[in-house]
Length: 260
View (tube, rainbow, N blue to C red):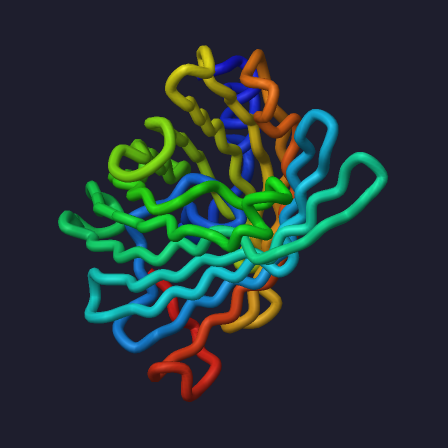
């Protein structure tokens, strides 16, 4: 792991612990957690990616998740993207990403947990493609997530690839360490790597952020990160995320404390 990530992990170890944290929004790395049967987890956010001569703003970024049983999650992610550059700002809906997560291993909070989370990246409109807002799409992301509690830290690892469909093969990998500060606030540090075939060694970002629980059903999300090392010209130099997570119980009939 890169030295900055080690420093952040050490800082997390020094914090008091009161509850267990999780991966997923606002971070890039996912975890094996699911909302629970009949519960919704809806993340509404704004995300900014700074890329060379342009800036991409996802507003809104919609990430809706529904629990089916205790170990299955249905997901739909879709952003409206604003691209600023060359003195102009253009917008369009980006690629949608429906998916299904299955936690096939669950040894409890103190044991191993693992899941498969296949997602399909749809195509996009000709306008979005022309404006550089979306990819050609029609490809599958096939990742696996593993989580384990080690002392005061919870570690989440995700490894996967876009390996079926149009476009070049792309590999992704993330490692996240998180720890609560209080019953309401938690912090986490993440190292995320993305490598597109034919574009060199890929890009690695170091991210830090957390969650703040306003109520059991409304949770604030925040994260900021920066690319470390090299990377292709179109890799983001920095990323920032701010949003709200809404938890709904009983198939959305009431606000609740849904969670993995």
